[in-house]
Image (cartoon, rainbow, N blue to C red; front, side, top):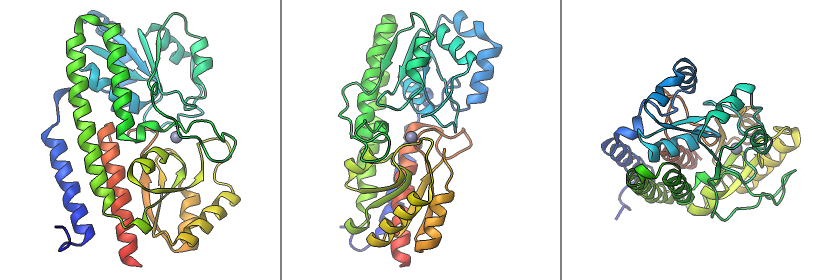
Length: 333
Ligand SMILES: [Zn+2]
């Protein structure tokens, strides 16, 4: 039994174990040089050596953002050239595609997108590209509706933040690749199976990490309401400043609403995300006395030097920051 340990100690130990597990299971495809871990380098290499992938006979897969590119890369291994349209750290919801994005898409053999109201620019973008197949990666996932704001009742797009849903993404990627390149079907099937196994292990670990947080403190306070799927999977309640990244962010009314909810529920620690300003959330912390627990990653991976160069890192990092943050905050009260 874990009762002889402090919850915090248990959590740190389990997170360390996961870190070791991740290191121990790292596969060559996860650190493939073609992975879009540095978007600038990826874009440069694409611009400088357009014939390289053609020389290798690889087909080109273009995804809308870095998280999907990393998932796809893990299934593609070294058989396909996978890239992301939006760069690391980019705001992906209201992205404005450039003419060179359209050229790149026209040159691709397959486009992968999230859908569910995520890429508000994608439909128009697709209209500018002729005869390139596109695959919706959230096909088969039950959407959670957005509860408030201008997008009320539309699907919350952040379905990848649940490792259980990520398994559906991987299956959709696998099917798309088998159809695109049937000669390597066995290879994609094996990669998808291995990657899905890692996602299942992350799911188990996240459950264990977040279970350390006492029930009455399981409030996930973020800037964007991007954690609905994660909260649903692991029994957390969500409080956020705005439901989805849009024009109207971080208004005095939004800040005041979060202040009231944090005070009412005595939430010890609050968070924001890497792709938006955390200024409003820091105001909430100052007013309520809650700790600001740092920035979580949702809409973009980090560079190779950052904490979450892969999607598996992203899930594990967020769970650790959330659970450690809530436990440290509640211990301090
Ligand atoms: Zn988002």
